[in-house]
Image (cartoon, rainbow over all chains, first blue to last red; front, side):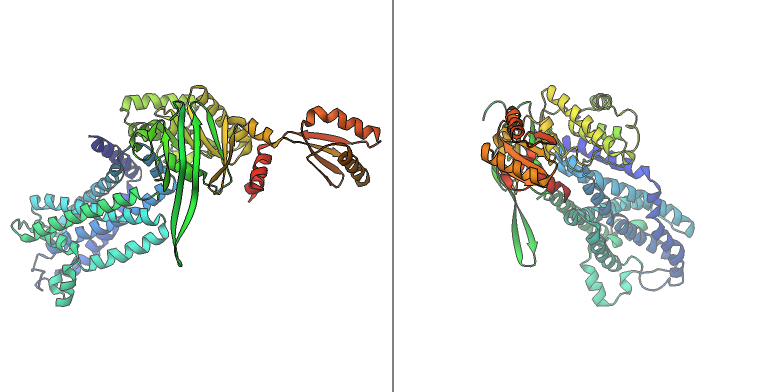
Length: 253
Length: 327
């Protein structure tokens, strides 16, 4: 099928760009690593409060941290697209018969791939801190992070295609990412929150992703959290991708 | 539609809607353009910046949906057969579209693959263009290191890689040094010799004059005149003869004499120079000289110039394209 071939071409091309400066893969891991080294130890003495079982603080924190990496790690990819809009590269692609969706699919799949790699690395770093992982659950959670990456990257590309300039993109993305990360129980579990805050978090799709991520790490495969998390994020990823595709098709007019 | 027309448009129109504080505002970028580009010619699309050249080209290359009118490209309907059009045309936009982060060769290979060519054919075509455009010395370097001329050569090669029948170029020589410009002109002539139709937009009159078989001048979104450069220039009719005298008094006597005896289109004196617009300037020169001589008005120097495309532009728009250039 043409779309598969085109997507592969675009994916390989974007991977080449990433691998030309592989250092940036590590740069965006810096923030989660700081949380891991400088914040996670604070939680140890909190063990026993609701949502943080004694001796299980690392198992609670790391799945949330990985969701945070997934959110922030791919939220700012729109800047690279603005650059390519400016140099005319995207326009050149659009004049060829290449499938429109593959231009974006090749990008979001690259972003998701980079992200999953980072999640694996962070998890390995966390093992000496006492993290124990259910292997099957962990592998499934990587798919979840990939889907979050596709969601955020697609959103970022949509705004990039609409604004076409960095000036508006940065504040927009910051305005969106901060509340959704605070309202998803990433740093501390939401059971600690007052009822009104828990209610607000209910409308944040990523709070379901964090719950699913924690259930997978713990190996609770019968938890309804997993179905909810995957269902909501998959739907969101599809909606966001279709939005970015629409923005690409409308870009010229 | 006529068999040999590569581009045919009727009333092609583009209106942009911009949102302002006072509500929506419509801006007509292209207001009903009729074009007929014949097979194998270089068609020049001449006009000042903002005249609607780029917008027209972007519509023709499927990048921009027209607001109204119709167009056929290579016989395909622009509204319905975009896929076929994309496969068979090449387009080089004003900014080029070279990916600065990849090498020139990687750029070429990917571009060929996007047109559906397999990797071996892509490689063959890429090497062919590297040789043809003499890019061997820099093609393996990252494109961000290229000079303006090198980048332009790659831009055009990217537009040509799949051997299209029609090449659309949006101001391909703007910003190039004279040497690179001359090089590109030669390449375009060779492409034409191979039977490729070229639709070239430019605001450089020398370029239109030297390269184009047919041209259209566009201003404020409307075509104001069409024809071959020779036709357009001869429609202006008059040549310009300038006589230089050693003082203003002699010049004004000469002006009076010429105004009385010669049927000139226009006569005008600035300082010591008498400008005379006259048909068949070349042929009538001896007569003019005899007239001045017999009245003891000795010209120090004489220049004769044929009408230029700038005169054509001036005639139809009341503005000079060169003035526009300097803005």
